[in-house]
Length: 592
View 1 (tube, helix red, strand yellow):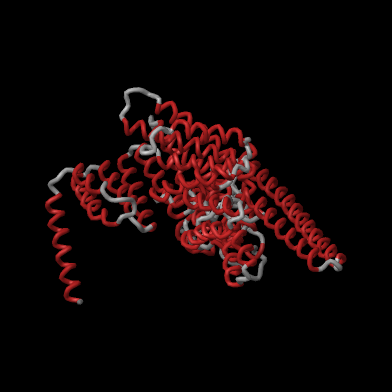
View 2: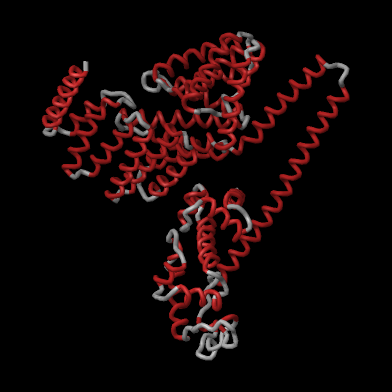
């Protein structure tokens, strides 16, 4: 068996080597035509992708190299490999110095983060980078494609009003672009697809904002305009699903399932698992609302299966776990109850982390249902125990009130600390002074002033040490000023001896000057410079507020997240997480 496998492997490798030699002479177009025969995430295409890349690199054709890496992203099954190829695409695009290529490369990486990694904040970071490069490019299609993906992230994060603005913008562009005459059929189809996807996502925003008339109008536009399911079958399925949801809202249950089944057939054929997951919830909800619990549980279990594999969840479909828990309790299946309860807790944790705008609503809704259920149980089974019920209810309300009060007090104090910190930073910016450095003209350093320093270096002290001369002190102070201006303090693990070597002095002399002329020991000196630096960056650029604590620490020369948090709180009076939150809140208020 081993010999047979070895023989097969050798034959295969010989074929691949021969094939590569043969195709080195063939055109990029011929290789691309072979690549295009494979579906997304099919690793078999990677043989031809590698041939394409090698040929492009040999020809030093940067655009073909970028295209090869984009194909590698598309056909790689591994998410880790997709990210590696995305980074390679960005690197190649930057070599081209073409802002359009760079923008598309960052967009591609953002799409991997959004659809494959499900890291929505990282996706947002990449989309913002893509948009910054696209602003300088005369490519409206690219810019609107980025705006669309920005809308998708903001929709998932629960910022429906902001997302709706993005989708309104892109729908207008794609509608006008698709109406142009004398454009290639494939180009027109791309524009139409962009338009239908934009108005569908916009209709979802309106539904979540309870603007149902606007939602219904867009759904009717979509269903009325898609004339060929072959060209826009997925979009047609989305609008069929939306029509079914509308009929459920209107309690017209007899017409609902037909629309859902049309959508289900298309999405299964197209392997649109994210869209299918949402549809499974609504089909399950339809069966649940019409009393067919067995069929409902079948669809809710599909959502549980997807969540177990990919951790994919949205507030829209989390209700399926509550129904699964209810069904398990009614069936007295303790194992299933424990499983679905654990799944719901995981789902809520993910939603609260990714979508803080919706977390309060979710928690409140869940608590209300739980308390209502407990109340009904107590009224039914313990009719004579009213006093205990009201005592428990009072304690719950009192505890909730106390928690809310504590939270409000904490937030008020935090806001005051933040405002004071901002004022301090603004005052420092107005004066233009460093926190420690004292100009030589202000410090009064002369031969007379340094002859008899204070403290243990004074001539009358029992511990007499050699005092640096004024010229040396001035020289070191000047080098310290240059050190601060060049931001040398951003070097990780910069110790006192390291700085002394950098300034061409010894640690004792440097320590003496820091303590007697800048009035601070070295640890406090370097600490404050680093924290003030990163705080200024966070004040100036919103993108820095989207970084995690580790990235912020590294950016200011601190190697440990814990040390950075400790130093930040010591210098600024609040944790970096709290500062980032308060700063983002202030920026959002200013925008509105």
